[in-house]
Image (cartoon, rainbow, N blue to C red; front, side):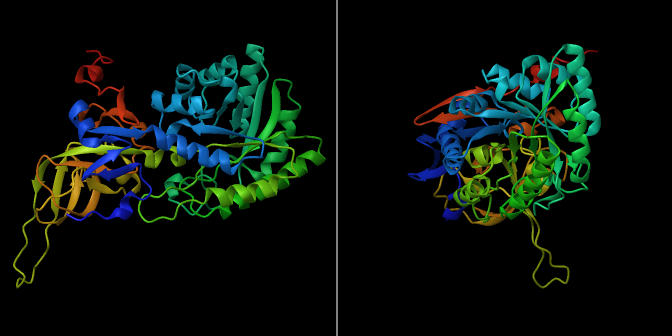
Length: 433
């Protein structure tokens, strides 16, 4: 079959001698070594994406906090820590992961609307860089816990600017109808309350309007609102030192244009040139999505039967390729109707090309990875699901008592297992009769 080269233009995967590879490792070799389904990541692409951002912001005081929720595999986090990243976390569990990879808690920002007492205490004792506060009640809880523990809590208010990020509604976070952040009209009073609290250190202001943003204009619309609020706070004697603009930079899954990091960075540097502010950004998907793939093997083919063309009830039946990966391994297609490219690991099949739905073995009609893909398939074929490095493994589950997939990190001509496949005993060990 003929493979559309456009599917690989943003991916770490490429064909070498007819075999799909990441860096200098053939993906068939990975599948043979560790089985399927398996996530495979490119160390080189992680570094490339990281340096694209740091280069774009060169000359501007900044810190990059990797958004752990995108991919929390320890080996992935360790690479970003070694590159110099801090971390953006949304749970105490993610803070534990930061500590496990030797990350500096003084370079951790804690976001999220539902921080528990235990999580706040953990963060205060650990000495994180900043809490991104999302409500008045949260500010009160942080103050109370800091008082009890004899700490001073560094905070920024996460502002909800009511800016439409023009993205999927499930990953839009900057509108009034979303649960995130403090309404701008309430921010001044809350900052004044925080400033007067001896258990609180007011450091900055934060904002995150959504994910998979292609047009940077909404990001700048939100920035203007933050800068206006910073000026209003200064007039009240509250001087902020930090500004956190979140992340959400879009990546190419299908035919989306690549987010122009250089143009965004140049415009941002120009706008902040006369501001004495430490910038923070929180990229996740941008760093990892196209650096990862999911390998899966075809278990069964279910070609559909077509009725007679002369029949009044002529309907073209669906052709299903049942693979060993499922919605519990990669939830994005079922959850967001997200599009992922699917390619054969080995080129050169001479079979008939048909339109296939790539589906998993889970007992849900929503269990699919891709629909209507032109592929020439046989049972046992190895397929590669592209752009799976973000929100793949982190959204996975054990639905239908399915062990979660293994994960592999490629570095040049070598690869290593960085998460073993779960066993059925792993799934049973936490339960009691």
